[in-house]
Image 1: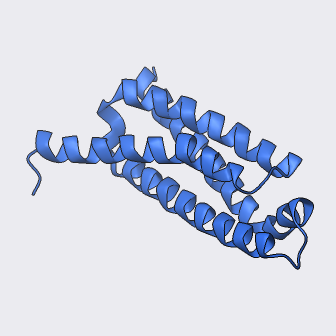
Image 2: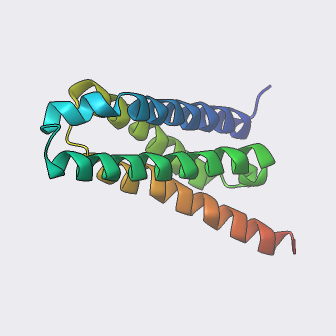
Length: 138
């Protein structure tokens, strides 16, 4: 019989991978999103382009870090945090897909990143730090 923790970790992995995949899709369709919101010749276009690239890279880093921690096994014992992260990553997948489909303003991606990628990243960092203290890893 599969335990709740095993199912939770599997769901968390799928949610992280799907949000990571959609973040890569944002990088791929970036020009189309920018063209739907700005004129290509303006300063706003180049500023929004830079902002979106930085946000996509930060999202990629946060999500890859979380997946690596998940694969390391450190997150197995924190069910309450994992449930919260599954919720955030599921919402992240939904909102990133919505962002792509509706071609929202690129600055909205910062809000998505802040709530649905940065917060889970910080929780994962908390797991790493507390695991190091708990297991006395140097």
